[in-house]
Amino acid sequence: MTLEQRLEDALRDLGMQRCASAVERFQTLTRGRLAGGRLAQMYRVEADEVLLLPLGDLHLGSTYSNRSLFMRFLNYIEETPNCYTVFLGDQIENATRTSVGMGLFEEDFHLPEQLDVLYEILRPLAQAGKIWGLHDGNHEYRTAAAVGLSPMRLLAQRLGVPYLGYQGYHLLRVRDQSYRIFTAHNRGSGRTLAGKVKAVDDVDRVAECDVYITGHAHILHHHTKPVFWIADDGTVVQRVRHYVICGSFLNYWGSYSEKELLMPSVQGAPLITFSGLTHNVRVTT
Image (tube, rainbow, N blue to C red):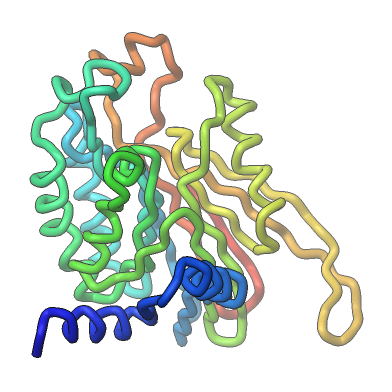
């Protein structure tokens, strides 16, 4: 088989084709983007309850990353039945020469090793089917912006778990109960507590879900908003939306946060419980 034929086969496997002209290529790409719908990740668990322990902002490789605490959370997920996780971004520090603070000088090891270490510590969870997927954060985006390649896409492929990119949509069925869950790293939220909370509160403008889970803000937070919902039988019922921010695993002293007088990070992660007996969500922070 010639190199040309191998290229054609690879493009066909990826759902792509070579275009005879720039116009044809534009039309092909446009059709794919407009017609291609996003599919939610779907899970069904026959249990009285399902636990979700979302993890974000590990910043692996940073001198200030609390790796021992992070491993305790991984061990809990691995050892607890019906317990799952989703990674919300900034799994790696991924410092560059243009990063804020001291950048590369505040890393114990750099991007290639960060990905290798993360692969090794996440592999048991991936093999057990306990990882819902990996999100990009702004720290992973540094590489994507520089060379057009996401480290988390590569890691997700290596682990055999979903790559979620910027936004994740999850449909969880626990016995007869259905839960719609939105996950993302989120964006800049300022230095104030009010700004960080508003950033997650605004996410319901993007999607209609039961639970919104974000990272980035480095605080542990949970609040709810009741809304009225038209049930399938036409009755109007009250549903509760949950908004969750998932903490971080960064130590404070000596870090860029101390230098800039930023709010100390709340370390750890929330535990979210989905009942299979009634439509009920509990969040422990």
